[in-house]
Amino acid sequence: MFDLATHTVVMLAFAAFAAGFVDSIAGGGGLITVPALLLAGFTPVQALATNKLQGMFGSASATIHYASKGHVDLRRQLPSALLALVGGAVGALLATVVPGDILRAVLPIVLIAIALYFALKPNMNDIDRTERLSPFLFGLTLVPAIGFYDGLFGPGAGSFYMLAFVALAGYGVLKATAHTKLLNFASNLGGFIVFAAYGVVYWKIGLMMGIAQFLGARVGASLAMRIGARLIKPLLVIVCLALAVKLLADPANPMRVMIGV
Image (cartoon, rainbow, N blue to C red; front, side):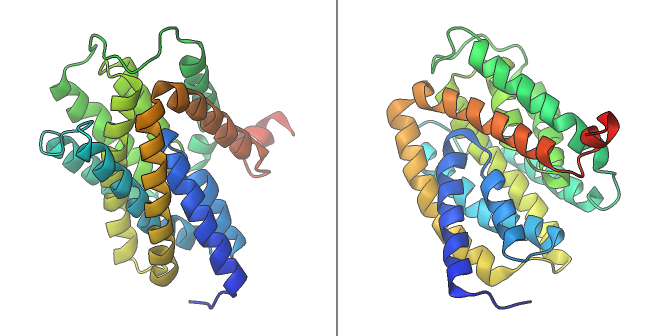
């Protein structure tokens, strides 16, 4: 491992705090931390692995805060969390085998579609609605599938959880956010276990960023519970669009190559 200059460490701590704040409300914290880690000189694998470590602190902080206010029942959601963990672990195991080009090409389109859904759907608020999928089927299918994606690739996993909870489970926006953080933590943990086993986690920086992310997530979750859908909905739209733009701006994105940009 390498030593980092003090100003680089401070930059990473600030990035982690900001990521924790944003991620606890709308997801997409990796949009901030992964580029920061790459800028600091980490290899892509080290950046993804270390991001899993520090990201667990933020999602755990938000989950605990939401649960303490009654927005998520941790005991009832434990089976879903375990399935998300397994999905994240399997995804991380296959990360070096499954080609990522297809995901990189399709993901911006999916993220833009999610942003449009939340931006244009009327009466999007904190009130629960009729579920379109039973809790059993939801937990057995969508939860491990999104967890698998989180371990395999990662960006936008929180947005996918949010969309699933709102569109299929019938959750209000705030309740969906609270449950998303729990499942995010579980799939992060699954991916982290695999990366740690391969020895690619930079522990000192990951733990330092984790503390900063924990604090940022605490502030973000408090704000989300105070303001609700009026804050979560627009921030989710912005995060999805920003992530889509970032992916499309990457010169290596297969979609840019296909259209000759």
